[in-house]
Length: 486
Image 1 (tube, rainbow, N blue to C red):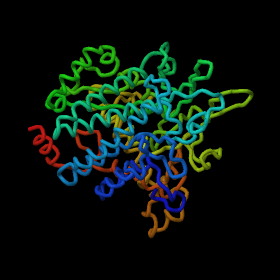
Image 2: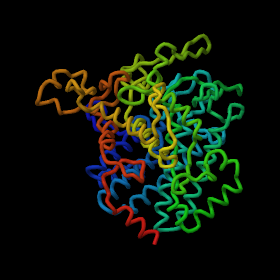
Image 3: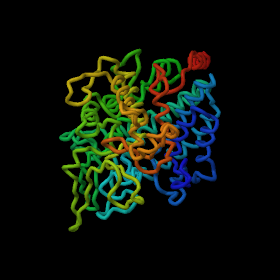
Image 4: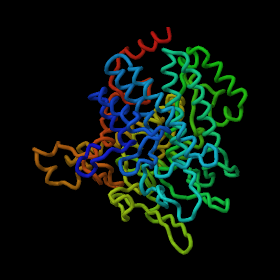
C-alpha cells in the first residue's frame, strides 16, 4: 500500500488498481507487481490469491485479470508493442484462481457466488467476512457480477493471445460459455431460484438464504446492486471474424443453447460494425439501474457515484433477527461503527475504483449501442444523453475532487484550509482513500495514492475504439493487431 503509516501491508485488489495507475509512468514496475501476487510465494497452490497479510483467506473482488489487461493496453500504447509474455504468464496463473472461485465460492453449484467480504467492508447489513447470525449464507449480487466480469476479462486476454497462438481460441470460448451460464443465473425473473433482480424495485439485491430453505432479499440500495453494470464486453468483428475457428465455435454454442443467446448475448442483434454485446443486462434493466445511479437524490453526487443511496438517510434499512436489529443508513463520510477498524465506510462516500470501472463500462456499452441509445442525465432533468456523454460527465464530476473550483479550492482538501491557502502547499494534493458523499472532502487514509490515483487515467485521452483510458497510441496498436492477424 502507498501509505506506510496507516497501511504498511499489501491488499490484493487495491494493488490491482495501483498497478493500472502506475502503468502510466512505469509499466515494467506495474507488471512486476501484478506478477508478484500470482507467484508461488503469494498464491496458494489451490489458486487463491491472498487478500492481505493478516487474513490470507478473505476474498477480494477478482480484478487481477482486469488490471493485467489494462496494464497490457497502457504498456502497448507507450511502447508500441504489447508484452504478450507478461500477458500469457499472468493468464496461466489466473486460470488457477478462476477455478478456485468456481469451486469454493459457488456454494450450491448454481453459478451464484457468495465470496464473503469482497473488499466492501461495511456495505452490507451483516459483516460479510464472518458467519451470519442467522445461519445460512448470502447470495451476493456483487460477487456474482464480479465473477461474470472476471470471465469476460479472461476471455478477452485469451483471444488477444490467440492472435499469436490459435490454441487459445478454445480457452477463450470456455470463458465465453462460463460467462453466459453466470448471466443466465443472475438475470432470471423473480420466480426462479437463482435470480437476484427485483422487478418491483428494478434493482439487484443480495439474497439471504436461511437454513430452513427460505430466502430474503436484502433491500439495501448500495453499490452492490450496480456492480452488474461492470460485466460488459463488446466482441468486435475483427476478433470473431478473423480468428480461425472462433466464430464457428460461438455460433455452434449459441445455436445449441438458444436460451443463453436470448437472455444476454444479443447474438441476433449486431450493433455498430457487426459487434456483439456480452452483458448481464438488457437495455431495459441497464436503463433501470442507471435511473437510480444517475439520480441526485440517490447515488449521484457532485463528485461521482456514492456507495449507498442517499434515500437511506431518511429510510434506513432494518433487519430484525431474534430480537436484535441490524441497520444500514446513509453516512456520507466517517463510519459510526468500529467494523473494520471504523476508518472505512461504504455506506455513502464516493470510492474511486468503482466509479472508474462504472465509467469504463458505460463507454463499453456505447461501443455497441452508439449515439442513438440515450438515457436521462441526471434523472429527472429531462436531458437525454448518449452513454458516452454520460461517461464523460461522470468522469468530469469525479475529477473535480482534485481540481480547483471557482473559489480556488480543491474539494478533496476541504479539511486543510491552511494548506490550501499557502502557495507553497496548495498544489501538494492528498489522495484520500474515499470521499465525502455530499461535498467531496477527503476521508480515510490521506495517502491511499493507489486507487484514488486512478484519476490520472480519467485525465488521459481515451482511445475511440476502446473503453479504456490510455495514452495516445497513434497507429502502433492497429499495426500490431494487423500483423498478428496476417
